[in-house]
Image (cartoon, rainbow, N blue to C red; front, top):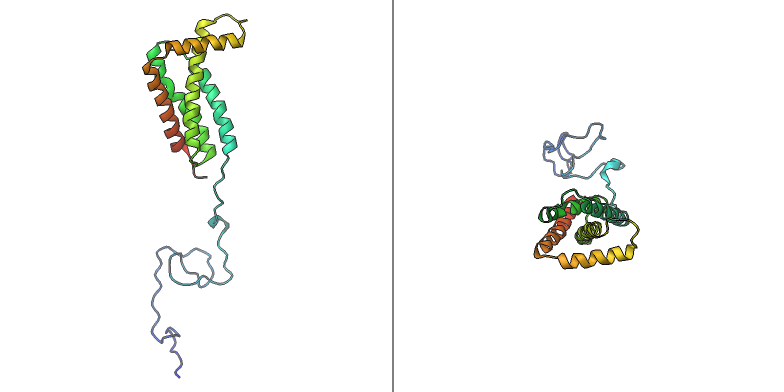
Length: 188
């Protein structure tokens, strides 16, 4: 049996080849550190940094839903009290309550299959409540009327005034709520 010659690979006796790194070695890495992606085993006892481990996604679905319901109510009030009074022009504001609902759902809730559907429904709900608020302000400008009578009259007036163009606005709210919730969703 022959002894390996200095500067050769001890297993085969061939000369050692140069190590090529695709990434520069980490400064302060222990002796024998192999760059990520290169063949070779890591040095025993070497612990990677704590930033290498990423925590799983944090889903705060309950908080996101509660915030989105609050945004729906605020969006409905803003839509119902908008200074524009032209019937056709106010309908295009349907995307604003959709954006108000979608932002907290996407940012707080993360990526979920349920949240875009919830965003679409809450956006349409904000549009509906905003239209009821518009009708109630037109019918009962004076205070002192019971809330049940105001809501009943507003709903009756809303049904009587429903046009095919209003269905387009509800479609805009539904699609806008769905798409904007998906686009604002974060992975964490």
